[in-house]
Image (cartoon, rainbow, N blue to C red):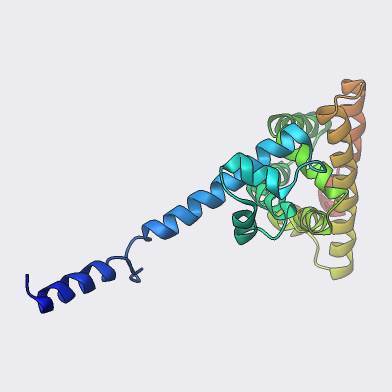
Length: 225
């Protein structure tokens, strides 16, 4: 091979390493995504084993088979790993409120059924919610994201909130919803996650009364009764 041919071949091999718009991601980009995913998976496992407070970036990196320096390439702190886990859980949380909004004629029976499904969600995702609850007490970013998720959940409830034409009434209902959500979240944590002794039937009755009262309060007088 002549010298010009060698240079041409080298240029060809070099161009293969470049990311060309419109083509599939390079192996380097794929590796970056894989490393980030490994860190998230390792973080979830470490939080579950050690608890959020005792887990360090180094623990997560070691579990993922990489270095502490590499961890900080992808995340500024362990709280950002929790934020990622929360983002993955939030669609299920919002879907629960969308299901509540879909109840056309709320009754104690169907509201209790909704509460049971919500309890099942917390039980299924107990690992994620446990990690989140531990992080809430320590990191403002986690707290802000959880409050934002709940505060904006009215957006997946167009049937309920579409009844309000007055901005003040709309905001009052949104805050009413947020207070109910906060109380429900506490009860789910203690009753479902921590399994504190509580009479579940009585708890369901109490919660159903509160949620039914809220839903009924959103109906215009002509639709009540």
